[in-house]
Amino acid sequence: MEAKTFPLSKEQLTEIVKRYPTPFYVYDEAAIRKNVRAIREAFSVFPSYREHFAVKALPNPFILKILASEGIGSDCSSYAELALADIAGMKGEDNMFSSNETPAEEYRLARGLGAVINLDDFSHIEFLEKAAGIPDLVSCRYNPGPLKEGNAIIGKPDEAKFGFTGEQIIEGFKILKARGAKRLALHTMVASNELSIPYHIETSRMLFCLAVEVKEKAGVRLEFINLGGGVGIPYRPEQEAVDYKVLAAGIKKAYDEILKPSGLDPMGIRTEWGRTITGPYGWLVSTAVHRKSIYREYIGLDACMADLMRPGMYGAYHHITIPGKEHVPATEIYDVVGSLCENNDKFAVQRKLPKIDTAAENYGRSPGDFVVIHDAGAHGRAMGFNYNGKLRCGELLLRPDGTIMEIRRAETLSDYFATLDLEAAGNFLPGSPHSLNE
Ligand SMILES: *Cc1c(COP(=O)(O)O)cnc(C)c1O
Image (cartoon, rainbow, N blue to C red; front, side, top):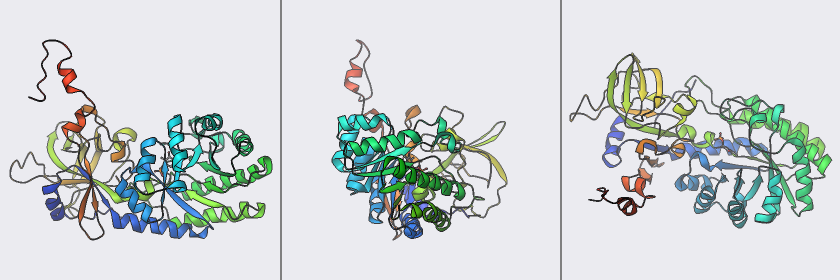
């Protein structure tokens, strides 16, 4: 059982909100660094190991720079993510480009930057050749189909849109070799938020066996195997975090048993984890604004599902704590909700919590309790949206020296209107004056 911690006290938050009102995300730089060092240390059992952070989990160049300084590369899947990684100083083969349904210009950018292109489909061999040419190094994404069980978030592999079938992989490597690729690699991504260590070891076994088959049937000796992302984090306090050393040792055992006897040692091992890298080290900080008592008791926050979509989208559990009330008994049962006109805008359903003070009840006297939503450092703000005209919140970084740095400001109304031509809208139909700028 892991105690859920938050690195700032109520007093510190009270100071911070004078400059940066809630809601906001805050990330703990020291904790992120400590975590990635532990991962690299555990995986140092392999002759060559590289982690490529899945940029979609936390697409902020300040965070990417921290990761780059720890020797982490990127895993990108779009034009903007490639650009972000480049801005953060991740260059060439530091970057994996694992996209799907990829536009030609994205292949051209990836090729131009020297990123490792990871093809999602057999037909993309020819598409890539026409769009950008076949680079020296190409990776292919494998979908094991019915050979592998999936889980609730990513679904079953045989129903998933990603990757090549086993037969296509063998054929694909033959074709890539014939068309000039000199270095080839294999990738898969079959689970999401999976805490089971045996599950991940089994995935590596499956890929190692496929690497042997690729050698035998396609005459290709792979340069590296990318085990993908999908390692889970303990969102619930009673869950156990994945022990990186146990996971790495299990994969190493499979490596020794399968790759070594087949003459495939040394083989590069790569991962493209997102959630595990930053998830536990980011929090969504909000303020309790309203209380409502109807058939249930509700606490309404100034954050909403537009800031953090996982609970509403997947029914995902995110732990909640109230700074200053860590030791107050959980005597109440609340639905903790946001302000969207959507009933699934709930951060917690029937959750036991200490009695929460709201800003509305203390109008003008005290600001109401802070409500901290844990494990929001990956697939958090990044999945946000502007539905209901909600402005997306900003991001703060807690530096190792204890200072706070704003790494993305909150959106303003001008950001919301930035893609509209208000002048043209005002003049659109005669007699419909617009008042927005008046
Ligand atoms: C989302 C994604 C990842 C990262 O997944 P996590 O669950 O955050 O580890 C890695 N690779 C690909 C191709 C992805 O789509």
